[in-house]
Every structure is written in C-alpha cells, then in structure tokens.
Length: 87
Image: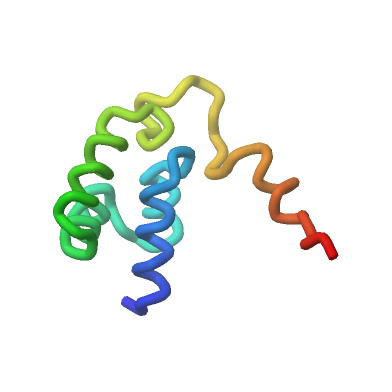
C-alpha cells in the first residue's frame, strides 16, 4: 500500500460521517483491517482516543445507521469543496 493511501484511510477513519463501508469500497480494507492499521500507525493514546470515538457511533457503522442514510459524505461537502480562497 502506498503512503498516501494509508494517510487517506487514516483520515477517513477519523471522519465522523465516513462509514467503514466507504473505506472498504474505496480501498478494500474491512473494519477489522482499518482497526489494525490504526493500531499500527497511531500513537497508543491516539489509537485509544480514536477507538473510544468510533465505538458504537452510528455514522461509522452502516448496520446501526438511521434508515434512509445511504451517502458516504455530508450533504454540505459538495458546497464546501467548491469554496474558493478569498483574495
């Protein structure tokens, strides 16, 4: 795996609204593999903080998400990504 892929997986894992299913769809990493990657790549205290944050979070687990939520990103992401720097 490339370093930039590892960085992107870590970034997506930290994002609240990105489910593990999105990481698996894009990179082929299951939730368990993401947890192993995070354990390996993060400092121990950062890993514990991340685990506490995602444990049981409905937005990270498709099975416990609210019904009807089928997106991988926030509705606001499209708007934010089109922002241009002010001069």
